[in-house]
Amino acid sequence: MGSAGHGLLTVFPLLYGACFVFLLWQAFRVMGQGYRAVPPANRGTSPDDRTGRLTIHPELLDGDGQLTREDLLTVRFDGDSAPTE
Image (cartoon, rainbow, N blue to C red):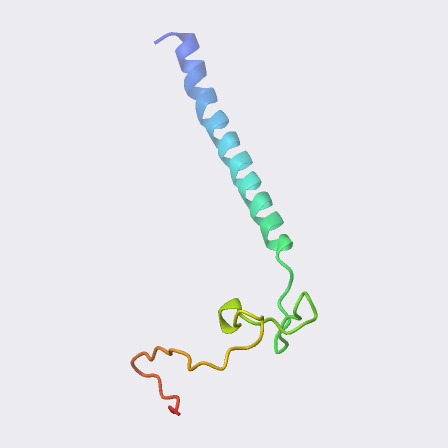
């Protein structure tokens, strides 16, 4: 192995380490931007409706746009202790 091979063996770990540190720094910087993009949660308060109106699921409306008076099908799962009517 010549002098050029020995120099490459010396430079390679330094170059590898520098790339590793740079990529690690970039990863933390990008993750930090993601965490700052999420607004802080207000504990104990529910988020306001964007429309300012009560939102009703479309399947609960009849053909005229009024709440349906029909009996609705419900699904019960194991461990559900809600009283039945």
